[in-house]
Length: 122
Image (cartoon, rainbow, N blue to C red; front, side, top):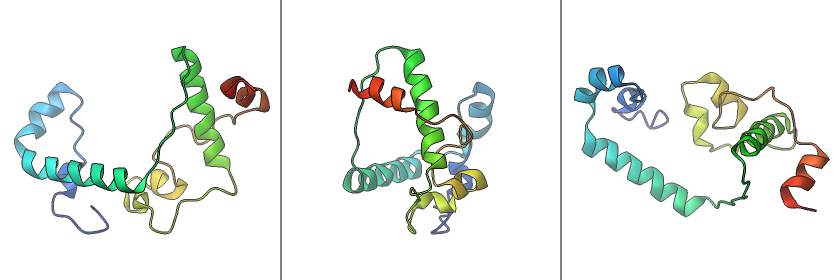
């Protein structure tokens, strides 16, 4: 949206998770515009991305692997966002510069060989 100077971009950034913020911002939200943008994002992701799922039974283990995976990707020297990565236009400079859709965990631990063995059962 920022890349294309979309007129709705500032309203898209409203955080509606807290009740007080919903009451404040809800009248400014144009549901038809919001729905159209979300449909476009869904279409783009469906056509341009593939996903893999790894089953991890315990929540504590899932959270630990997620943190370490973020740390691993953030520190990977061979990994980089593409030149057309949409996150480069995100207003959060940490997100825009790191090449990940995460703003936390960039300095976290990396996955160890043992972690990978446990994850894939090898």
